[in-house]
Image (cartoon, rainbow, N blue to C red):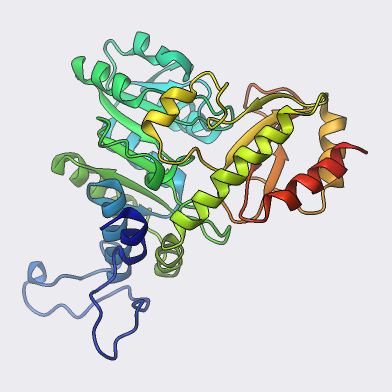
Length: 366
């Protein structure tokens, strides 16, 4: 069965006369558990829920390994850090990775005695930091600079040194990129973004092929309580059925927008892995099914960027990405990323690309 078909059916029960096509939500903190609780498939809501089971089964089809849902993307990140790192251990993190991942590493985990080493995503620079490390954290494409890491090369180099490998797969999604098949131990994502795609929930997940590592993540989730609500999980599972359609359209729109921006003399540093002149385009094409919905570009300065964003009628100024609406923001307003004041991160939505380009043209021409 082809992937575009499988994703629509993933995690759903076989058709049955009179049954709904999409199962309902289970709202429950406790389940009827007579006798030996180990004989009951469900006991207590912090441990498991039938709605999670259906969604996690769907995730497993995409990831190629068992997966666990979390309350947010950063909860999923924290689970891998927490399950793998102890005082005295070393984690290697991309210096251009998601800002909150760096805050977590430099904050709580540094404070308890975990050593943090940084290296850029581009050109597999993290390889030089692996000796003596416990965990390698990869993010590709990176957020917001859209650098590409060679997952297979980095994983092989890490494993040769006894280092575990986790990949933040948020920007690509598990539909576009399979980190576990490329050698990683963990695939991590914020499903708030592209996987759910409607900007209406917070969710994350971790997938792991190794049963021992998977059990560590499960214990972390259960004991810390970083669990998602059943409503959010149900919404994400429902939304996941259209991921192929959404991502195919968004990637096509992102490429059109990036090519348009390259034609403008007042726009510089257009970044999108789907562009033939992206420094790692060939690598991205090798390990990604789609090039994603995120692109970036730079305008002259803060004032010009803010003028552009305020003049747009269809491009919505907001943070985050992956949703069906085209959005953008001046990323430097948050701090924490090494970007110019006029740097804009954009998410291409599912609208007609010509409408978005016309809107951007009008805003840039002011």
